[in-house]
Image (cartoon, rainbow, N blue to C red; front, side, top):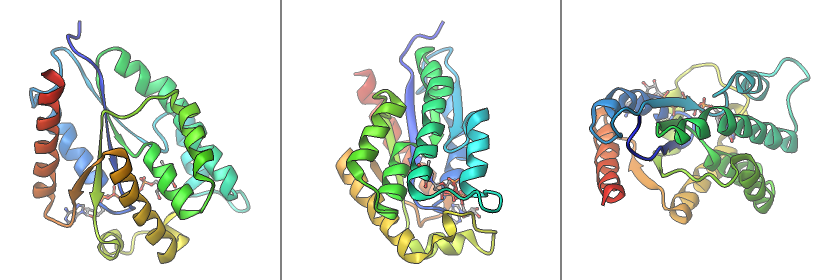
Length: 216
Ligand code: T5A
């Protein structure tokens, strides 16, 4: 029996900002941090691709076979479909059981990439966000803030996926989008061009402060 409330924590930022690295750091620390309710579990997940259906959608979105690349509106709807399945199958059931969920990307990525990046209608995106999540809002979102040039450098000569291959101007719009969203949605901005453990420490400290407020 879990004695507390489930919580949804999200990491957001441009490609190569260090989300996956921090997700690993947090997933080993959180269960022994004393922050999670007694008996609860940590569910670590990601978008796109947090479900079996989402895994197929991820492939179509990021590395589609020849001639199967989606146009912007289809891309938006595929990300929304991935999220709807993710919320219904993974996130909401975990939260209902009092577990904590740590997700690599969530709704902010759609607003940043498809809204700011692709220039699709942001009101429509907000409406789709509401439909796909059924109104679920993360308890805490960490935006890993990093200069775009460094995020590109960090990705090195790894093969680019379809979104990463959109080019610098696109990624600049996405990066500005994340900055606007962090302000508008009350995200925690984390300076991410520091050594891994310093970034982890900043996230941990912010989370400890917020968790104390949850308990108060
Ligand atoms: N997308 C997603 C949309 O367009 N709309 C949506 O709605 C959603 C949900 C998903 C793609 O889909 C798009 C956005 C994306 O383009 P993804 O799986 O999230 O892709 O892929 P990326 O964000 O590209 O993930 P990456 O793995 O490339 O980047 P991460 O996770 O941000 O970075 P990470 O941790 O892998 O680090 C990159 C490199 O930097 C090093 C790491 O060791 C690694 O080599 N590094 C550091 N080096 C020095 N100091 C640090 N502090 C470091 N942290 C990491």
